[in-house]
Image (tube, rainbow, N blue to C red):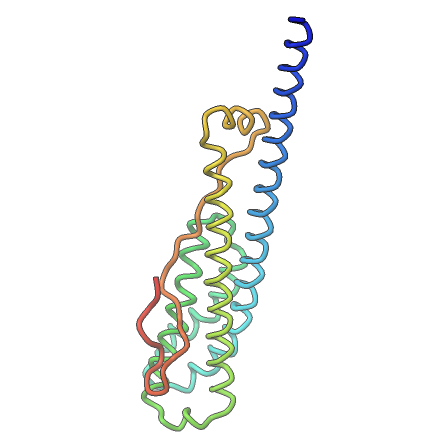
Length: 188
């Protein structure tokens, strides 16, 4: 009778171990997929930088150094692999977009320029996708990090060398502008 009890207890432990491992792998997969989606959205947003640089060249308010910085931002974003550096680079992209759109406010002729209006809408859509992807990634990272911090489950994480994910810090973003102002106050 004791043998059957020990056998049943061992089977339950094995099943619990397998269920915990499956949950780790599921959450890890969700976090990796969310990171890939975030990276794709960041790359799509970076593709708008050359067009933005061309638009910025038309504004007297923006100096030559800013336009050169814009041209280097796209390549810098691609080469950065460290998450804190990546967050800083992406923050610079958002600030560059804001600076160009703020300078565009001094040019009323752009209100009717179809190309600039399309660029503005594309940037706003790309920024919104990036913000949604950041939230999705941070949520997936949080879920994974929570399960790796639970005492008996963290032993499984250590056993399979699963480390917690870093969060992608939020910075300012562009929102859909009001008709009279470009861009409105930043969102956190």
